[in-house]
Image 1 (cartoon, rainbow, N blue to C red):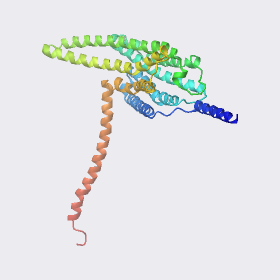
Image 2 (image 1 turned 135 degrees about the horizontal axis):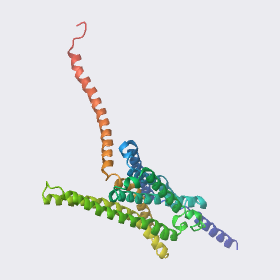
Image 3 (image 1 turned 30 degrees about the vertical axis):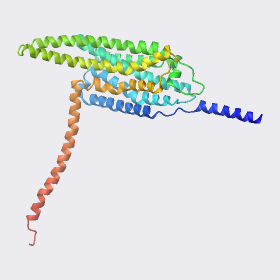
Image 4 (image 1 turned 60 degrees about the horizontal axis):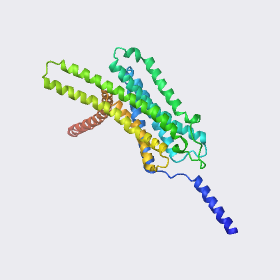
Amino acid sequence: MEAFDNSSSKQSCLRAANMTSTPVLDVPYFLCESLTALLSIVGNLFICAIILQNRKLRAVVTNYFLVSLAIADILVGTVAIPCAQFTNLGMPRYRPRLCLLMLCTLLVFTQASIFGLLAIAVERYISILRPFQYKSLMSPRNSLLVILACWVLAILIGLLPLMGWHNPLPANGECLFNSIIKNTYMVYFNFMACMLAPLSVMMVLYGRIFLEVKRQIRKVAEGEVDVSAQERRRIIVRKELQTATSLFIIVFVFTACWLPVHILNTVMLFCPTCSIPNQVILTTIILSHINSAINPVVYVFRMRSFRKAFESTLSCLCLSTTVGVLSGSEIIASNTSEMPVLRNTSLPGN
């Protein structure tokens, strides 16, 4: 009887230990997320610094949206990704409100980034297809209102699970995204309404932009009577290819980063018994966060004004370094040139 009691107490202790065990740290995932966060913070802070330092860039309404997008991506790197790393370890344990707040923070900032991309697409569409109405539609005041609306919508959408659309905290107290955030919210609302809809709108807008730019380029090129027909055709094809490449990169990067994680959520909703490797899930999460690190490259460094500002900043840094090196070399040269004179001059008293 005593042996039975001892064995049962050991089993209960083992069950309690299993319930309170902390998930093992996934080192590759942690390092990839940390690198993504670093790139997101550095790249987007650099974008904000360029805009703030350059008076011409500050005066362009388009850059309001780029700053808003950069801020959203900075917050993804500084807040959302660390929250994802903590919740991947099941932390914080036995604190349901804090756990939900951290999970909702992930949703808010990633949704703000998506809405920022959509706002840029709308602004570009108005700029190219409605150029005479651009100043009235995209005035600084209206632009700030649109940016504010994007952030308010992102906050409301991201905080919905905190208002009740979630599963209860598991018995072991672990704060895991897939066990607390309902798949119905992630698939029907976050995916279909808040990701597929912006993606569809962006594809339509960029498609219209491409067709309009193609028409304008062809019209301008055909008006150049100085060059031959073959040369005009070459100019048209080259410019159309550049435009198509830029728009393709914009839509492709957004789709490639965000679709995999939502497809997995859909599979988990409609096939609960399907076994999905944890590494696949973590890879799709990293991909969705990588979008915040790629945005500065896709949306800014392909723009001529930002490339010029970047090149001028880089040239100033190189110039200051070169001046310092040259000044140091001049000092050395002057010292070496003076040394023979001191040698050849007779000392006093000789």
